[in-house]
Image (cartoon, rainbow, N blue to C red):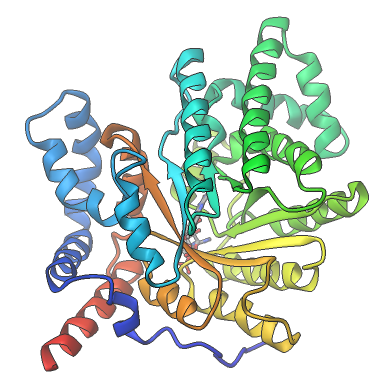
Length: 411
Ligand SMILES: Cc1cc2nc3c(=O)[nH]c(=O)nc-3n(C[C@H](O)[C@H](O)[C@H](O)COP(=O)(O)OP(=O)(O)OC[C@H]3O[C@@H](n4cnc5c(N)ncnc54)[C@H](O)[C@@H]3O)c2cc1C
């Protein structure tokens, strides 16, 4: 289908009204720099090393450039400035405490859990923070997830059967360790349910995703009976995920819970393809961009067809996919501000989509990470990589920024 646009993303005045001329110039400089592949590639190699060894001025440079563009602050309190600004434009916030990676030990995982709970308690006091996000690698050992995932692959049956058998087969010590992970997740979701804050469980690498999916479905089964609290993330750059979305819906119908579905294309494509090639297994990634787009849009259509049981978050910078959701709602005679439909873009990207959606009355948010610089480095590296092609996202961002700068100059 070829939807007629009901909303336009061309209005750069709405898109950048929240940015001063100086901030706009800074964004222009940053995206121009990220359009130089040699610079990004140099930065990606050097930055983790410079952070690790406390190289002078590294943090200052990061703080004043890429961090400012994509991150809400180093502490929860600092995010308030950005959140308040966004609220002026009816844009909501998804708070993301930027810890990931899973090698901090049990104490570190308990600490992250406490931080997640703090985020929920804080979000509950704010008018425009309906959601927060978590990464299971923030409170679980990565290698334990990897082991469980591999064991699940050996087992027959449904995702849940594979999961239960794999947990059963873990050595006693690791079974207890996993039990602690479950308790952390339970505590997070319980607090969120009480405080009416949605929990979005991010998707990460395929080789840890099966236990994350199983755990998330169990949480949805517990907390999503009356209202939607927990959302899983579905990466449509994987060729098996449209079917997974449909299977998750079937499970929700059978168990009588609401499926929270945050649809993304996926952020780890290069890493996934590289690992598959190195370890000689078929790549889980779609053969081309068109296939990712086709499945993503089919996912949006599927969710909007089943809004009685699915709460959808269109998490994308793709204009067609965002418009498609609005168009389908209108076609069905449903309001753009439907309680089960939400749009979201990353802070620092695609402001033309976010602010024009908000202007049209849609429920839309910026995904706003925060945390100490060293913890948000992996997130920033993904943003730099994603924005490193002038032919892709950087070209789009630069074009919009230039258009707005020209518009302001003509005034
Ligand atoms: C609010 C929000 C939350 C997010 N949370 C997550 C998350 O939890 N986990 C996660 O992995 N990502 C997450 N992302 C990132 C997302 O997955 C994408 O990387 C990013 O948004 C770019 O995709 P897009 O839908 O914006 O569209 P586009 O810019 O149109 O598409 C780019 C994407 O298409 C896919 N693609 C590109 N080339 C090819 C190719 N040759 N073959 C196959 N596929 C290709 C890749 O996924 C690429 O990132 C999130 C994004 C947003 C906005």
